[in-house]
Image (cartoon, rainbow, N blue to C red):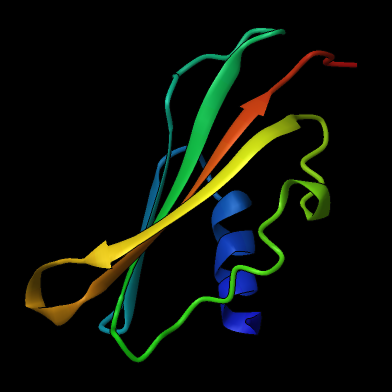
Length: 102
């Protein structure tokens, strides 16, 4: 759980588009829009490609437990799957909005 929380925190604090690589995992983060205006909704996606030995605990990936100030967290979705070379993929999709910039 600590590894999953740490990886998610690292990606959230990184720039809009980033990629970290290792033999054990690779992380990519992206947003659905290049600009956001007050009132807009957008999606922030974190994609982690990892070895099958890593498992993510998603108990705390809930809207109520993820303060994202100054953004409002509208929705949290996760997905998992298999990819090439026996690796797995874990994605977190955050739908965010911003209503105030003060």
